[in-house]
Image 1 (cartoon, rainbow, N blue to C red):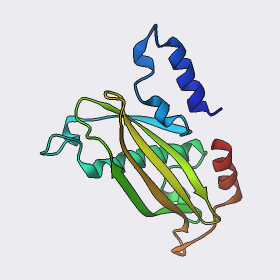
Image 2 (image 1 turned 90 degrees about the vertical axis):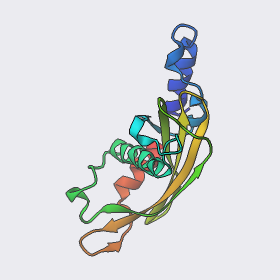
Image 3 (image 1 turned 60 degrees about the vertical axis):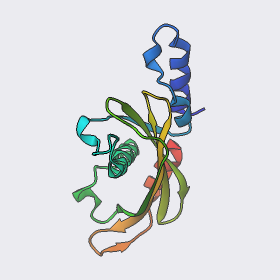
Length: 165
């Protein structure tokens, strides 16, 4: 049973005492080992009155970086010179509009782990409505920023991913 499932189950047990502890829709993220809460800011909305589409990629990025930090990796930067990662592609499917005020719970999990690339899935759930607001994925490639070419993920990174999942 994953850590998220245990956390939500514990919250559900307390739900009658403290309903705000297990927001609606959290069961949709039980298969995601990393879930990050992101407060929607007034400025995140566009002229149509909902969160601007491009911001979901930033929300996914925030969850992705949290995932990498949980692996014990340094924050992206100088420590990534020879054994870093780079995004090859991202996608996002918008499912329901989100408006201020709200908080999104954004999940991150690996759905594929290859020798030199991985696919990370993301999902964003509105705590206000309990609806899945967006899903997406990112293709992540091991990258050497010195020689400017892809490389295999180091064994310790692969082991950390498998342990977290």
